[in-house]
Image (cartoon, rainbow, N blue to C red; front, top):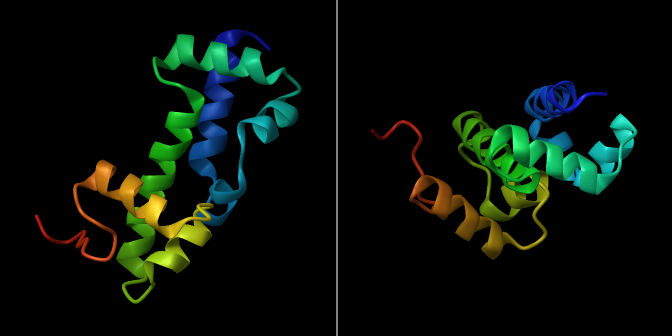
Length: 112
């Protein structure tokens, strides 16, 4: 698979996953799924997209967490962190805050 096609397929695969699927995904899983070496996948992705594959996955996770919060206003931070693949709720909260500027417990997606 050429570099462009591999990157395109990787992006599409990750974006189409639901929150629980993306919470379980790893770079190793993606590499195995596409039948390529992990290092090769990461290098090609970085070259084509300008960000690391790990960062891309985390950004997509955060967007999906935001969407999940819109439909599940009563979910706890701990529940959301587990669904999205973070074992440590405090770490998840820090990542969420760095992405959205607010802790998930205080985040209001409808507040502009």
